[in-house]
Image (tube, rainbow, N blue to C red; front, side, top):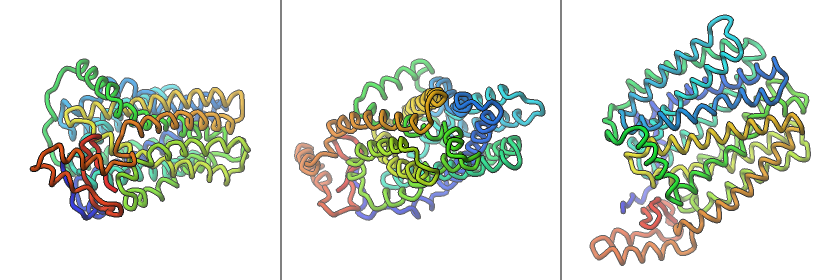
Length: 448
C-alpha cells in the first residue's frame, strides 16, 4: 500500500514531464489527421451513394479492423519495447495513407486501405496506453489520462469541423495528405522525444499471451465491469455514425454533420479540468455509475425531433457526462500488472471499437427504415438500461465507493500489523481532498 503526498498534483506538473509532452503532441497530431480523413471519406461515400447504411459502414471502417489488430498485435507492446512499436505503427500508417493518394483509387480501395490503417492503430494505442503509467503515476497519471482524453475530444471536434469544410471546398485527397504527414510527424516525435525502455518481458507466445490476457480481463469481475462501462461508448456514440443523414433531416449539409459530431465532445472538453482537479478520486469512483447512466439517458430527447441547436445541446450534455470514462480508466490501470498492460488495453479497446463498429452499422441500417432521431433515442435508452445494471454491480464490487470506506480501510490497517498500520491509518478525513491512499481491498487509489 503506497501513500501519496497531501498536496495534489497539477496539470503544470504533468506538462513539465518532457516525455508526456511528446506523447500528448504526437497523439494530438495523428488524431486530428485521422478524424479529418475519416469524416472526409464518410461524407464522400454518402455524397456518392446517398445511403445512410453505406455511410455508416464507411465510418465503421475506422473501427472494425480493431478485431484483428487488437487480437493479434496488441500484445506487441508487452513483448517488444513500446517506443519502437509506436514508431513502427506510425510509419506503416503513413505509407498506407500515402497509397490512398494515388490517382484513380476506387472508392472500395480507399475503404480497404482505411481498414488496414486502423488495424495498425491497435498496437500503437495499446503501447501508448501501456507506457503512460511508466512515465507518470498516482494523481499525475489521472491528470495525464484526463489531458489525453480531452485532447482526443478536441481532435474529434477539430477534425469533424475541418473534415466537413475540407470536403466542401478542397476535396478528400488533401485531407488524406494531411493525415499522412501527421503520422510521420508523430513517428519522429515519439522516436526522439521519449526514452528507450526495455520490453516488459519476453512472456509467452502470441496465442498463449492472448489467452492469458483474455482470462485476466474477463475472469476478474471488477476489471470486467470497468471494461463494460467503457464499452457503453458504442451506444452513446451512435449520433456520430449517422450524423450525415441526421443533419440532412434538419436541412443541413456537410458542415452541419460536422457540427453534430463535434457537439458530442464540447461538453467533455470543458468539464474534464473541473472533474479531475476539483472532484476527489473517491468521489469520481462513486460517480462512475450515475454519470454513465446520464450519458445515455439524455439521448432519447431526440424523439421530440429538435432542431440543430437543441440537438447539439443534447449531444453536448451527453458528452459531458461521458467524462466518467476518466475515473474508469484510472481504476482499470490500477488492476492490471505491467507485464500484461498492453495486452489488456488492447483487448479492452478492441471490445470498445468492435462494439462501436457494430452499433454504427446497425444504426445505419435502422436509419434506412426510420428517422435517425428515433435510432439515436433507441440507442440511448438501451445504453441507459445497461448502465443501470453495471452501476449496481460496480457499487457492490467496490467497497471504496460504499458509505463506510474509511472504516473499512482502518480495519485493514489494524489487521496489517503495527509496522504498516501507521501508514495505512493515514485515511483522509472528510474534506481532506488532497490526501490519497491506495485501497487494499479494491486496488484503486481513493480519497475523501
